[in-house]
Amino acid sequence: MSTAIAADGVTLHYQPRGGGEALLLLSGQSNSHRWWDSCREDFEQGGYRTVTFDYRGTGASDKPDEPYSTREFAADAVAVLDALGVRRAHVYGTSMGGRVAQWLAADHPDRVGALVLGCTSPGGAHGHERGKDVRRALSQPDRKAAGRALLELMYTPGWLATRRGPYHTVGDPDMPAHARRRHLAASAEHDAWDALPRIAAPTLVVHGTDDVFNPAANAPLLAGRIPGARAHLLPGARHAYFEEFRATASRVVLDFLAEHRGLADRAG
Image 1 (spheres, rainbow, N blue to C red):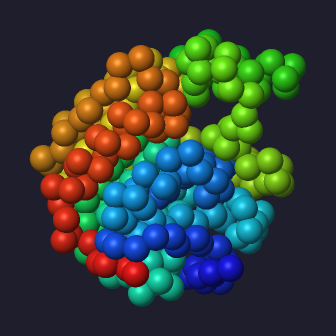
Image 2: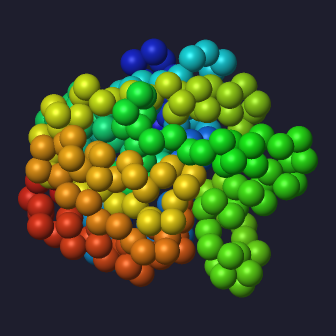
Image 3: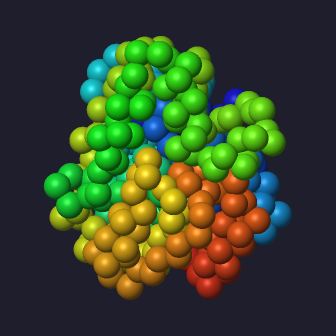
């Protein structure tokens, strides 16, 4: 098992696969690298060396009970790239991973080739937040009902009717409660609005039109704030667009990355 050591001594577990230019895949809140299980092979078959890691608090990484932040997660990602000997990687972050990717590209521009931000938000006062009805559904005392509500925010009814799971996008089941709280706070406190104009990497923003978990209105907001960025909306898709709409979504991202071949290190 491959490990990297963060600046504060936290041990991070990472999982490189495939060969070719490095592509760092950043997972959603309270999820391990398994978030990417459904579509990771698309990028490996596309000629990329995919790199995932377990955020602090998830998977096999350390789980300190102390404040986390999306900016700190970005610094952890740099530690992973350092451990791999990768100077520059393409970066694809979805949900909270997209928030982490914003800081990675803004704070460490020399480490990012092409950037893809999926189903994410700039956060803060400028971001479009989920509605009160969504928050109520997720916080209801009936945890089974709350879990079902989360699934319905991730996937369409048709998808859920024909698949029983397991679903690797609804949280790492082995996370301790303190780590879940720390992840929730890190995502909620994210605000990269002032940093977005510093992003120099070629950027694609991807979002499902029917995503109300992280409202689709955030896509044009991000694309308009990041110099030269463009947005691609997937009709009918909800939050886990990269899984349910895999065939289309992976192709959109691969086509974008193909435009920027050579901007990342080859990591065989």
